[in-house]
Length: 116
Image (cartoon, rainbow, N blue to C red):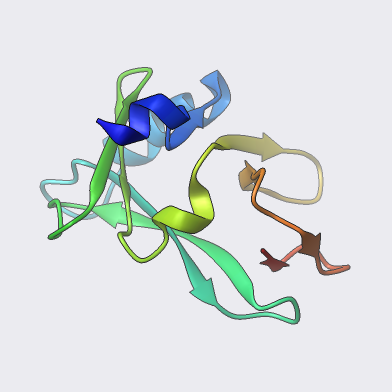
């Protein structure tokens, strides 16, 4: 309830939602419900995002339902992701999910990690 007063935990662009739907439909695993996102300690700036298949809701996880897909937010990552937007970018050299995160204070030169 308190989260609603602060705004959504995480939103998705249409491109991200379409990509999530595509990944779930082609998943090699059975029973995939959505994707799990979170933050790991890694990289030269200290933190990096991770995205993986989710076949169940883990204890204390928030579930974001947006544009017809479910995103499970790792409970240890919630404070780092509040207010973020998840997008999917594809160009000639690379493709992947990207995050516009108002909590980021710095990002490393290669773009793989960030700090808050």
